[in-house]
Length: 220
Image 1 (cartoon, rainbow, N blue to C red):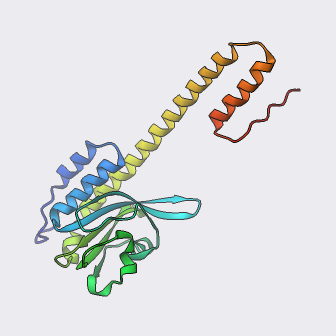
Image 2 (spheres, rainbow, N blue to C red; image 1 turned 90 degrees about the horizontal axis):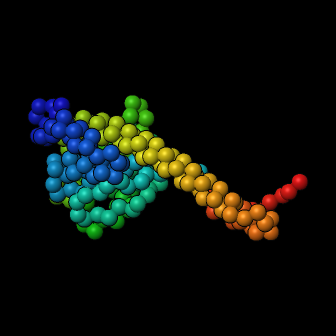
Image 3 (cartoon, one colour; image 1 turned 180 degrees about the vertical axis):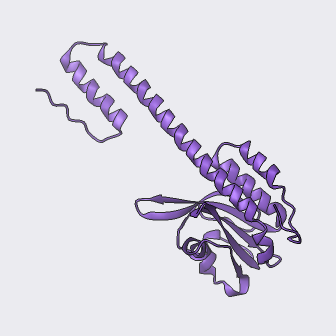
């Protein structure tokens, strides 16, 4: 619920319903960015998901709406303004005159920045993403940003569930693909009884399935 005097008009129930209508991460992120942009029409709003690979954690852009900035697709977890949210998950507001360009280099801004804010997306106590709001015309007030707490909470839950849905779908497709490959292999193997013809086929099919560089086939 938006607190009285916040000057924001967001129907959380309607916002949640629209999120439920989209199953995947990027559409849900776009709906989240649009909800923020509706409250700050002259801003640029970007929704990030925090991901991890062998080299560590990083931010990935899932949606960006508004004009004046073209965010990089990925950003190091501790880089620039987003790094402040990564180190201490809370709403942070930066005034344009206190920022150096290196702090928001990931946004590739072409205009003078008036104010920049980052809102954490938390699932319980776990940081799962962030919303970045970039204003060119007016300062972003902390009281108005705190009123977006309900939006951030619902968005975080929906983005986590959409990622789980996408992972489950990916696993199902992988299983179906492997079953199809096994069926194709069975047909190929049954097509000949000649060892000289069959052995190269076995190696070739195993390379396709495992996406490896070489296959050695040993016979006892």
